[in-house]
Amino acid sequence: MALSRTDVGVGDTIGPLAVPVTREALVAYADASLDRNPIHQDEEFAKGVGLPDVIAHGMWTMGAASSVVAAWAGDAGRVEQFRTRFTAMVVVPRDGAEVEVRGVVKSIDDDGRATVDVSVSAEGTKVLGRCTAVVRLDP
Image (cartoon, rainbow, N blue to C red; front, side):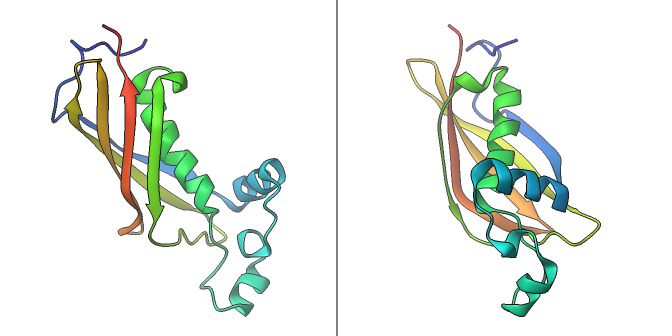
C-alpha cells in the first residue's frame, strides 16, 4: 500500500534494514548491467590491483538502497528522485556482506513529496554520501 501524507511525518525513520550481497548477486548484476569489470567478480584480479577483495558495483549499492526506500514507499514508481555520491567500497568476501540502509524523513513539501535522507553503510563504514530520495505521497 502506498503511503499518504497522513501516514508520514518529518522525523519518521526507515530501517535500519540489512541488504545481503553475495558474489553470485554481483555476477548476476554484471550480466544484467553489462558491467563485467573483474574487480566485481574475480578475487585474484581484485587483489592483484590492490583491492582488499571483490567489491560490489557502486550502482548495485545505490540500487539496494533505493529498493529499501521503494519498499517503504509502497511502490517503486513513487521514488521520483534518488541521488548520492559514492564514498567507499563495499567489500564482498566469499561468505558475502551486508549493506545497512536507514532513512529519515527531512521534509514534506506542499505537493506531498517527502525528502528522505538515506544513510548506507557496510562494516560500519559509510558507503554512500549525500544520499537523498524524493518520494511522492498520496494526498
